[in-house]
Length: 318
Image (cartoon, rainbow, N blue to C red; front, side, top):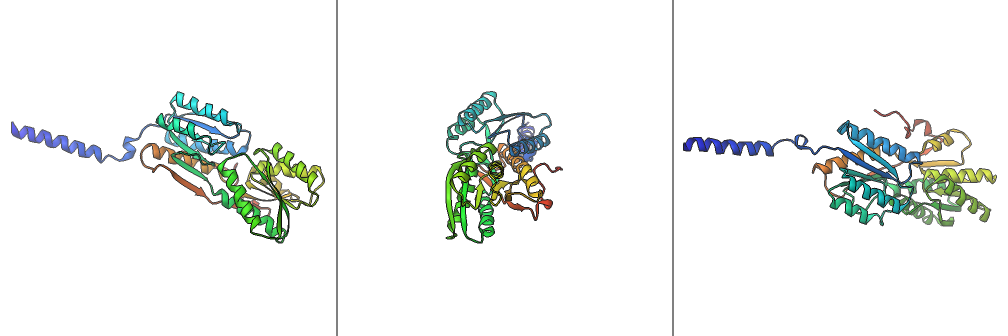
């Protein structure tokens, strides 16, 4: 009888050891639902991020339920969206924060509910994982192009955007470059183009009306830069140099036209960025990733000289 008990206890111990050694993949929590909230679905950048998330999510679970909403750069709206995701009990919230500080309480509520927060494009306080472009480098590259094109001397302006980490970092990177060059005079740096083409156009109209000697403008994203180009065309200021950040499809088209006022854009890959954020979020959910993991993707400067080699947002993906 004692022999039988020993064998039984040994079998239990062996079973426990086997269970402990089962690969993490075999013990995975199933990814059943995802909530995505982005700054503005009218911006093709965010359309590409959603596609990247969807494709990566379907590799994990073909039947995963995905809900996508647009915050329209409205903090209160995004907070309500996060609260709705909490009530729904999603597994992961994919967050493109419209305000990189004020979103903190909503992030905390979601985490307290056991939901993984994966931030993309913009940092969010308390996010479990974050993937974004190195936006300081993006601002520096776009504005160094302006400095070089002007030979180190000229009058410039910055069109900033809503208060998000990505846009703020681009602004700071650009301003650092301008301030490092004593021949560059920054005529305006506090005008908010609201992250949109119409906003960029409105700001640019004001700048061109006020400053007859403006040489170049940096738009903190491509929609604002494209709006600035439209305003410059309307006012006959075809000698303005404009740069942006994104590498958006309309910027590609403009650079290929041969007469673009937009001369350069520090490109991002929204599809890869958001897909990688979802992948890291899923790994965090499984206990495979450390909290606070941040990945920065190096931007590439796209100009008329290399745009034909550029794999843009709408390129075919494997």
